[in-house]
Length: 264
Image (spheres, rainbow, N blue to C red):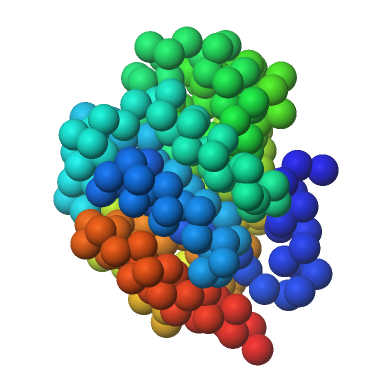
């Protein structure tokens, strides 16, 4: 069983959702970013999304765009992202790590080479926001051979004709983007999230994670009442920008408390 499958199975047995925390690799500096990453599980993150910095992050809002900019200016590369995961794995063999970003850096690195190096480093899943399922085989096939899940995005605009097309090739979990637009802006209502999760589950047995617009422990708890995971990105990245790992971990602990008490 993969780390992702094991984590979701364990949490299902506990009748609670996962807290998925996003941070951009190398932000605000490589040293501080590694310290933040290493401390996330103890702070309460069940799954980590590690952003691969990119110059043209068109699906992301200002907070994550600035995080990518800081990381690139600090010297972060795609090889450096894998190096961070490898360092993390020296202390933590259980917490799943999913890399999230855009296809261009992976394409330049080489999909086959990347899949092998990512698996060796300890990566569990990939989210490539600008790679639709019709074009994904170039990366999906080598990732599958390396035991890495390919996680696809769905959105409020993904209708019932499109959902099966997206979900046929998905593994690990399904990421539901709860709003239309960029990250870190408005939030969806709890009722809208409940209805969306119920609809997605008609098409797949995979866990459903919900992200975009979740900024507070209360909002994370509202998602956790219905979905299998709540994803928090921009709100965490805003804390990361201050360069204080302890501050980030304290905020993640608050989010984790919200998620863990949501179904009590």
